Length: 354
Image 1: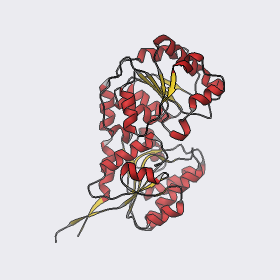
Image 2 (image 1 turned 135 degrees about the horizontal axis):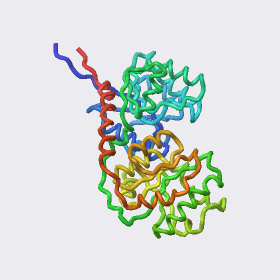
Image 3 (image 1 turned 90 degrees about the horizontal axis):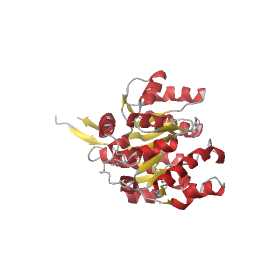
Image 4 (image 1 turned 180 degrees about the vertical axis):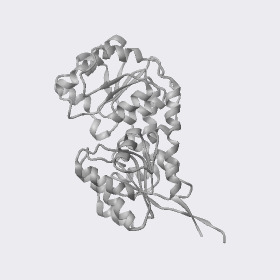
Protein backbone atom coordinates (compact mmCIF):
# COMPACT_ATOMS: atom_id res chain seq x y z
CA UNK A 1 0.00 0.00 0.00
CA UNK A 2 1.25 3.45 -0.87
CA UNK A 3 2.42 5.61 2.03
CA UNK A 4 1.38 9.22 2.30
CA UNK A 5 3.04 12.02 4.18
CA UNK A 6 0.94 13.58 6.90
CA UNK A 7 1.59 17.25 7.46
CA UNK A 8 1.55 18.52 11.02
CA UNK A 9 0.12 21.64 12.62
CA UNK A 10 2.57 22.44 15.41
CA UNK A 11 2.03 24.84 18.28
CA UNK A 12 5.20 26.96 18.27
CA UNK A 13 5.97 28.50 21.65
CA UNK A 14 8.47 31.24 22.32
CA UNK A 15 8.96 34.85 23.40
CA UNK A 16 7.23 36.14 20.31
CA UNK A 17 5.32 39.36 19.79
CA UNK A 18 7.19 41.09 22.61
CA UNK A 19 9.04 43.41 20.18
CA UNK A 20 12.42 41.86 20.84
CA UNK A 21 14.37 41.82 17.58
CA UNK A 22 16.30 38.72 18.61
CA UNK A 23 13.17 36.64 19.10
CA UNK A 24 11.72 38.08 15.90
CA UNK A 25 14.82 36.84 14.07
CA UNK A 26 14.45 33.40 15.68
CA UNK A 27 10.85 33.13 14.53
CA UNK A 28 11.73 34.30 11.03
CA UNK A 29 14.43 31.63 10.70
CA UNK A 30 12.20 28.93 12.17
CA UNK A 31 9.24 29.64 9.88
CA UNK A 32 11.52 29.70 6.85
CA UNK A 33 12.96 26.28 7.75
CA UNK A 34 9.68 24.48 8.50
CA UNK A 35 8.98 21.57 6.16
CA UNK A 36 6.77 22.41 3.23
CA UNK A 37 3.06 22.39 4.00
CA UNK A 38 3.37 22.65 7.79
CA UNK A 39 0.86 25.19 9.08
CA UNK A 40 1.99 26.50 12.49
CA UNK A 41 0.09 28.16 15.28
CA UNK A 42 2.35 30.63 17.10
CA UNK A 43 2.06 31.91 20.66
CA UNK A 44 2.49 35.69 20.70
CA UNK A 45 1.78 38.73 22.86
CA UNK A 46 1.21 41.38 20.16
CA UNK A 47 -0.84 39.02 18.02
CA UNK A 48 -1.90 41.47 15.27
CA UNK A 49 1.72 42.48 14.71
CA UNK A 50 2.93 38.85 14.48
CA UNK A 51 0.05 37.92 12.18
CA UNK A 52 0.83 40.82 9.87
CA UNK A 53 4.61 40.47 10.02
CA UNK A 54 4.82 36.68 9.59
CA UNK A 55 1.47 35.67 8.10
CA UNK A 56 0.75 33.01 10.73
CA UNK A 57 -2.13 32.15 13.03
CA UNK A 58 -1.52 33.08 16.69
CA UNK A 59 -2.82 32.70 20.22
CA UNK A 60 -2.11 34.72 23.35
CA UNK A 61 1.19 33.52 24.85
CA UNK A 62 0.40 35.19 28.16
CA UNK A 63 -2.81 33.20 28.63
CA UNK A 64 -1.96 29.67 29.75
CA UNK A 65 -5.60 28.66 29.47
CA UNK A 66 -5.83 29.81 25.86
CA UNK A 67 -2.52 28.16 24.94
CA UNK A 68 -3.59 24.85 26.50
CA UNK A 69 -6.91 25.08 24.70
CA UNK A 70 -5.26 25.67 21.34
CA UNK A 71 -2.75 22.87 22.00
CA UNK A 72 -5.64 20.42 21.79
CA UNK A 73 -6.19 21.35 18.13
CA UNK A 74 -2.51 20.95 17.25
CA UNK A 75 -0.60 17.73 16.83
CA UNK A 76 2.90 18.73 17.99
CA UNK A 77 4.49 21.13 20.46
CA UNK A 78 7.63 22.97 19.36
CA UNK A 79 9.62 25.19 21.73
CA UNK A 80 11.26 27.51 19.24
CA UNK A 81 14.57 29.08 20.13
CA UNK A 82 15.79 31.17 23.02
CA UNK A 83 16.25 29.93 26.58
CA UNK A 84 12.78 28.86 27.64
CA UNK A 85 13.79 26.26 30.22
CA UNK A 86 15.39 28.57 32.78
CA UNK A 87 14.50 30.21 36.07
CA UNK A 88 16.31 33.53 35.66
CA UNK A 89 13.09 35.14 34.43
CA UNK A 90 11.02 33.32 37.06
CA UNK A 91 10.19 29.82 38.24
CA UNK A 92 6.69 30.53 36.95
CA UNK A 93 8.04 30.77 33.40
CA UNK A 94 9.81 27.43 33.78
CA UNK A 95 6.63 25.82 35.12
CA UNK A 96 4.67 27.27 32.16
CA UNK A 97 6.81 25.57 29.50
CA UNK A 98 7.23 22.37 31.53
CA UNK A 99 3.45 22.10 31.90
CA UNK A 100 2.98 22.51 28.15
CA UNK A 101 5.46 19.70 27.52
CA UNK A 102 3.69 17.42 29.99
CA UNK A 103 0.22 18.12 28.61
CA UNK A 104 1.39 17.58 25.03
CA UNK A 105 2.84 14.19 25.90
CA UNK A 106 -0.28 13.19 27.86
CA UNK A 107 -2.20 13.98 24.67
CA UNK A 108 0.14 11.73 22.71
CA UNK A 109 1.77 14.57 20.80
CA UNK A 110 5.50 14.88 20.08
CA UNK A 111 7.47 17.58 21.87
CA UNK A 112 10.34 19.20 19.98
CA UNK A 113 12.98 21.53 21.44
CA UNK A 114 14.50 23.54 18.59
CA UNK A 115 17.66 25.61 18.99
CA UNK A 116 17.16 25.91 22.72
CA UNK A 117 19.41 27.34 25.39
CA UNK A 118 19.18 25.60 28.75
CA UNK A 119 19.51 27.40 32.05
CA UNK A 120 20.37 29.07 34.23
CA UNK A 121 18.68 26.74 36.72
CA UNK A 122 19.54 28.34 40.03
CA UNK A 123 17.16 26.44 42.28
CA UNK A 124 17.14 22.72 43.14
CA UNK A 125 13.43 22.54 42.31
CA UNK A 126 14.16 23.96 38.85
CA UNK A 127 16.82 21.37 38.13
CA UNK A 128 14.53 18.60 39.34
CA UNK A 129 11.70 19.87 37.14
CA UNK A 130 13.87 20.04 34.02
CA UNK A 131 15.34 16.62 34.76
CA UNK A 132 11.78 15.33 34.74
CA UNK A 133 10.56 16.98 31.53
CA UNK A 134 13.57 16.56 29.23
CA UNK A 135 12.77 12.85 28.63
CA UNK A 136 9.38 13.97 27.31
CA UNK A 137 11.01 15.52 24.25
CA UNK A 138 11.03 13.51 21.03
CA UNK A 139 13.91 15.52 19.56
CA UNK A 140 16.19 18.23 20.94
CA UNK A 141 18.78 20.61 19.54
CA UNK A 142 20.73 22.97 21.80
CA UNK A 143 22.19 26.25 20.65
CA UNK A 144 25.51 26.02 22.54
CA UNK A 145 27.86 23.57 24.20
CA UNK A 146 27.07 24.82 27.71
CA UNK A 147 23.39 23.94 27.27
CA UNK A 148 24.23 20.50 25.91
CA UNK A 149 26.58 19.82 28.81
CA UNK A 150 23.97 20.94 31.35
CA UNK A 151 21.40 18.66 29.71
CA UNK A 152 23.80 15.74 30.00
CA UNK A 153 24.35 16.46 33.70
CA UNK A 154 20.57 16.30 34.06
CA UNK A 155 20.53 12.90 32.39
CA UNK A 156 19.53 13.82 28.81
CA UNK A 157 21.74 12.56 25.99
CA UNK A 158 19.42 12.29 22.94
CA UNK A 159 20.18 15.67 21.46
CA UNK A 160 22.27 17.60 18.98
CA UNK A 161 24.37 20.66 19.75
CA UNK A 162 24.83 23.51 17.28
CA UNK A 163 25.04 27.29 17.25
CA UNK A 164 22.23 29.77 17.78
CA UNK A 165 19.66 29.41 14.96
CA UNK A 166 19.91 33.14 14.15
CA UNK A 167 23.29 32.37 12.58
CA UNK A 168 21.19 31.01 9.68
CA UNK A 169 19.75 34.49 9.05
CA UNK A 170 20.77 35.82 5.59
CA UNK A 171 24.11 37.60 5.50
CA UNK A 172 24.66 41.07 4.07
CA UNK A 173 27.81 42.76 2.73
CA UNK A 174 29.38 45.34 5.03
CA UNK A 175 29.77 48.92 3.77
CA UNK A 176 30.31 50.78 7.02
CA UNK A 177 33.85 52.18 6.77
CA UNK A 178 33.78 55.62 8.43
CA UNK A 179 30.22 54.91 9.54
CA UNK A 180 28.63 55.58 12.94
CA UNK A 181 29.14 53.65 16.15
CA UNK A 182 26.00 51.66 16.97
CA UNK A 183 25.15 50.70 20.55
CA UNK A 184 22.79 47.84 21.38
CA UNK A 185 22.86 48.28 25.14
CA UNK A 186 20.27 47.21 27.65
CA UNK A 187 19.37 48.16 31.22
CA UNK A 188 20.79 45.83 33.87
CA UNK A 189 19.98 45.60 37.56
CA UNK A 190 23.66 44.98 38.24
CA UNK A 191 24.64 48.34 36.70
CA UNK A 192 23.67 51.33 38.83
CA UNK A 193 24.66 54.84 37.70
CA UNK A 194 28.14 54.37 39.15
CA UNK A 195 28.44 50.97 37.44
CA UNK A 196 27.68 52.50 34.04
CA UNK A 197 30.30 55.20 34.43
CA UNK A 198 33.43 53.40 33.12
CA UNK A 199 31.60 52.30 29.96
CA UNK A 200 30.17 55.74 29.34
CA UNK A 201 33.58 57.31 29.92
CA UNK A 202 35.18 54.85 27.48
CA UNK A 203 32.46 55.70 24.98
CA UNK A 204 33.14 59.42 25.45
CA UNK A 205 36.84 58.86 24.75
CA UNK A 206 36.00 56.86 21.64
CA UNK A 207 33.57 59.51 20.38
CA UNK A 208 36.10 62.29 20.95
CA UNK A 209 38.88 60.40 19.20
CA UNK A 210 36.79 59.47 16.17
CA UNK A 211 34.18 62.22 15.85
CA UNK A 212 31.64 59.52 14.94
CA UNK A 213 27.91 59.69 15.53
CA UNK A 214 26.60 57.37 18.27
CA UNK A 215 23.40 55.54 17.34
CA UNK A 216 21.54 53.91 20.24
CA UNK A 217 19.48 51.07 18.74
CA UNK A 218 16.92 49.52 21.16
CA UNK A 219 16.88 45.78 20.50
CA UNK A 220 13.98 45.22 22.88
CA UNK A 221 11.50 48.03 22.27
CA UNK A 222 10.15 48.23 25.80
CA UNK A 223 13.25 47.39 27.82
CA UNK A 224 15.91 49.26 25.85
CA UNK A 225 14.05 52.27 24.44
CA UNK A 226 15.00 55.49 26.20
CA UNK A 227 18.06 54.01 27.93
CA UNK A 228 20.25 56.94 26.88
CA UNK A 229 17.85 59.48 28.34
CA UNK A 230 17.37 57.46 31.52
CA UNK A 231 21.14 57.39 31.96
CA UNK A 232 21.29 61.10 31.22
CA UNK A 233 18.74 61.65 33.97
CA UNK A 234 21.23 60.28 36.50
CA UNK A 235 23.82 62.88 35.33
CA UNK A 236 26.26 60.09 34.43
CA UNK A 237 26.42 60.58 30.65
CA UNK A 238 29.39 62.73 29.58
CA UNK A 239 28.50 65.76 27.48
CA UNK A 240 30.67 64.44 24.64
CA UNK A 241 28.40 61.38 24.44
CA UNK A 242 25.14 63.33 24.51
CA UNK A 243 26.31 65.71 21.80
CA UNK A 244 26.94 62.86 19.36
CA UNK A 245 24.07 60.53 20.36
CA UNK A 246 20.63 59.85 19.01
CA UNK A 247 18.25 56.92 19.42
CA UNK A 248 17.23 55.03 16.30
CA UNK A 249 14.30 52.61 16.39
CA UNK A 250 13.84 49.87 13.81
CA UNK A 251 10.86 47.59 13.26
CA UNK A 252 12.42 44.25 12.40
CA UNK A 253 15.73 42.35 12.16
CA UNK A 254 16.19 43.25 8.48
CA UNK A 255 16.15 46.96 9.35
CA UNK A 256 18.64 46.32 12.15
CA UNK A 257 20.91 44.51 9.69
CA UNK A 258 20.76 47.52 7.35
CA UNK A 259 21.96 49.74 10.21
CA UNK A 260 24.71 47.29 11.18
CA UNK A 261 26.07 46.94 7.65
CA UNK A 262 26.58 50.70 7.56
CA UNK A 263 28.27 50.89 10.99
CA UNK A 264 31.94 51.45 11.67
CA UNK A 265 31.54 49.53 14.94
CA UNK A 266 28.73 47.80 16.85
CA UNK A 267 28.98 47.65 20.63
CA UNK A 268 26.57 44.89 21.63
CA UNK A 269 25.22 43.68 24.93
CA UNK A 270 22.34 41.75 23.39
CA UNK A 271 23.22 38.27 22.08
CA UNK A 272 21.28 38.56 18.84
CA UNK A 273 22.52 42.08 18.22
CA UNK A 274 26.03 40.65 18.29
CA UNK A 275 25.04 37.84 15.93
CA UNK A 276 23.18 40.02 13.42
CA UNK A 277 25.97 42.60 13.41
CA UNK A 278 28.50 39.86 12.66
CA UNK A 279 26.23 38.57 9.87
CA UNK A 280 26.23 42.10 8.44
CA UNK A 281 30.03 41.96 8.39
CA UNK A 282 30.31 44.80 10.87
CA UNK A 283 33.22 45.24 13.28
CA UNK A 284 31.89 44.20 16.70
CA UNK A 285 32.77 44.32 20.38
CA UNK A 286 30.77 42.68 23.16
CA UNK A 287 29.79 43.67 26.67
CA UNK A 288 28.67 40.46 28.33
CA UNK A 289 26.07 40.18 31.08
CA UNK A 290 25.51 36.49 30.30
CA UNK A 291 27.80 33.54 29.45
CA UNK A 292 25.95 33.06 26.14
CA UNK A 293 27.13 36.50 24.96
CA UNK A 294 30.69 35.82 26.10
CA UNK A 295 30.73 32.46 24.28
CA UNK A 296 29.74 34.05 20.96
CA UNK A 297 32.27 36.85 21.41
CA UNK A 298 35.04 34.30 21.98
CA UNK A 299 33.94 32.38 18.88
CA UNK A 300 34.22 35.58 16.86
CA UNK A 301 37.51 36.63 18.47
CA UNK A 302 36.20 40.15 19.14
CA UNK A 303 36.88 42.35 22.19
CA UNK A 304 34.92 41.19 25.21
CA UNK A 305 34.16 43.05 28.43
CA UNK A 306 32.60 40.99 31.22
CA UNK A 307 30.10 43.25 32.96
CA UNK A 308 30.52 41.27 36.18
CA UNK A 309 34.23 42.17 36.25
CA UNK A 310 35.94 45.57 36.60
CA UNK A 311 36.03 47.50 33.34
CA UNK A 312 39.29 47.14 31.43
CA UNK A 313 41.38 50.31 31.76
CA UNK A 314 42.10 50.27 28.02
CA UNK A 315 38.52 49.59 26.94
CA UNK A 316 38.33 52.63 24.69
CA UNK A 317 41.57 51.56 22.97
CA UNK A 318 40.17 48.07 22.36
CA UNK A 319 37.11 49.55 20.71
CA UNK A 320 39.20 51.98 18.68
CA UNK A 321 41.31 49.12 17.29
CA UNK A 322 38.12 47.40 16.05
CA UNK A 323 36.80 50.50 14.31
CA UNK A 324 36.36 50.00 10.55
CA UNK A 325 38.13 46.61 10.75
CA UNK A 326 35.86 44.03 9.16
CA UNK A 327 36.11 40.74 11.10
CA UNK A 328 37.39 37.53 9.48
CA UNK A 329 34.76 35.51 7.66
CA UNK A 330 35.85 32.05 8.84
CA UNK A 331 34.28 32.12 12.34
CA UNK A 332 30.93 33.30 10.96
CA UNK A 333 30.99 30.61 8.28
CA UNK A 334 31.66 27.93 10.89
CA UNK A 335 28.86 29.16 13.14
CA UNK A 336 26.42 29.23 10.22
CA UNK A 337 27.30 25.63 9.35
CA UNK A 338 26.63 24.54 12.93
CA UNK A 339 22.95 25.52 12.62
CA UNK A 340 22.30 22.47 10.43
CA UNK A 341 21.59 20.35 13.51
CA UNK A 342 18.38 22.28 14.16
CA UNK A 343 16.90 21.33 10.81
CA UNK A 344 16.98 17.67 11.81
CA UNK A 345 14.60 18.43 14.68
CA UNK A 346 12.09 19.95 12.27
CA UNK A 347 12.05 16.78 10.18
CA UNK A 348 9.95 15.28 12.98
CA UNK A 349 7.08 17.54 11.89
CA UNK A 350 6.33 15.17 9.01
CA UNK A 351 5.86 11.45 9.26
CA UNK A 352 4.85 8.62 6.99
CA UNK A 353 1.44 7.07 7.47
CA UNK A 354 0.20 3.83 5.91
